[in-house]
Length: 190
Image 1 (cartoon, rainbow, N blue to C red):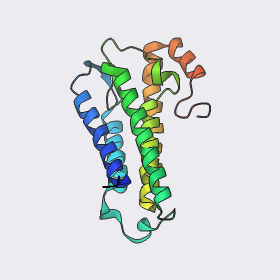
Image 2: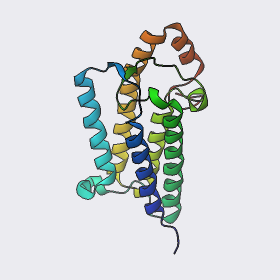
Image 3: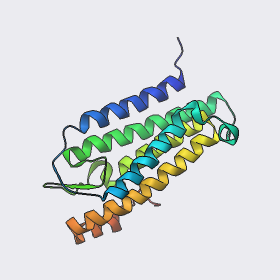
């Protein structure tokens, strides 16, 4: 039976979800967290982005228009980007270990991680998930998925600004230096 890129994309997202779920139980205690209003915005935007990307409910009107042709080449390219993005996000998630949180927090005894994927970009989880979203959007090929990708990138940029504020307050000049040396989301660019 030949490999189905759509099943591969689903499998990549399931693995990401399992890693996040299991990892949520082995984090350090939270010392400080983001304001409730910011958290609500974060959750709403992520739910909307994931729903637009994955649910047929939004396959209506212009949202179902294709922005790329429906072809195996585009589907396989989308799968490759999804798999690469998922792998980067998982690597970064495992690498940051117990310092991780799904929301903007500082953990007790928080450590500034600057090696591994964090030596390439400051927010490799966001980079990886964004790449995976882009790959899935490309494979599905509908406008709704492109909107989901834009929403996700917007939210990760918004969240990273708050996260960096926390990191500067915690690590001071050490984090400021890290910001000068390593780009936020895209190596050598942004």
